[in-house]
Figure (tube, rainbow, N blue to C red):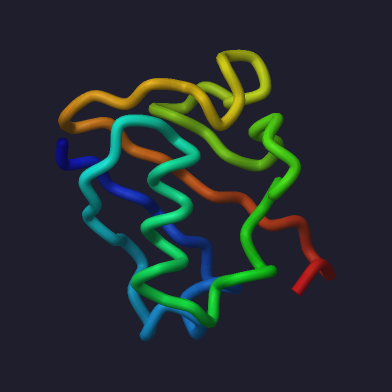
Length: 88
């Protein structure tokens, strides 16, 4: 299931300079796990490792207002990661 993860400028150096990464994932949490598997340097730098979905958006909707990291994904969905200034 192909989705796109959009990375902010602050995370791109940890992901080989990529601003977007295509992944196959069923949930937002699975997408983040696969992202870290592909780019281990991202570990510890992603927003909300606690599971509520803070700082992560699916198609513009905050995961906290959906199902957190259990939010299901569909083909073509976009996850956008937001990292507050000063957290990296």
